[in-house]
Length: 224
Image (cartoon, rainbow, N blue to C red; front, side, top):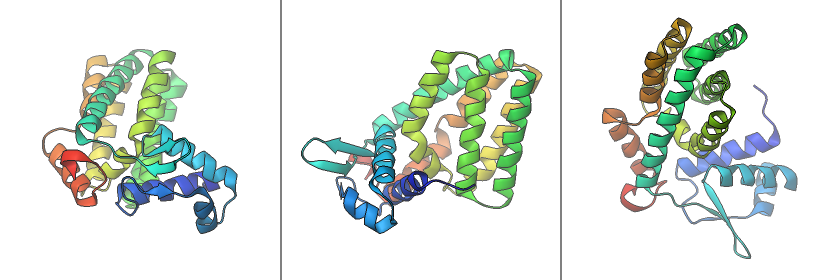
């Protein structure tokens, strides 16, 4: 998948931040970023705007652009809400999905399988996003679709970090298969439960995720 300069820069900065190469509170110099990545001001501005939307970067008037500090408690609360929104999307999609949308959902699952077989977490990350977007649309609830996308945008870097946890990509794929099976069967409650559990960080997954965050030092407060 060919990516624009904006996507390339955003992905690089996102990766640097969640992997601790750019510390919380560190100032980001747009001109320096343009020189480093050999891009014009427009991709730098657009990448920063997207990182602000995801909560990884903050912009202070007259002070500049900085890597944000996020608390572990807030992050877990956001995942709890995301799980409920995704569960609702799954429940409605199981009842409302069209034949064309179901075909598209199967195709996105196939692309996720290809990325997983290749052991490519970055490609899986993008196909995973397409998979979830398909379910949002299939809910046929515009307000829910909009709210889910907005929160997903804020959580994207941390969902990406989850895929770096050992064996998470394989287990994520198995969960995708269960979600598709539930939606195909029109089993609304099963689809809701499968999507909620897929997104919610709990049990051993919670421990693994927090361990990754602490190791990388990307959060403030108790997580560091």
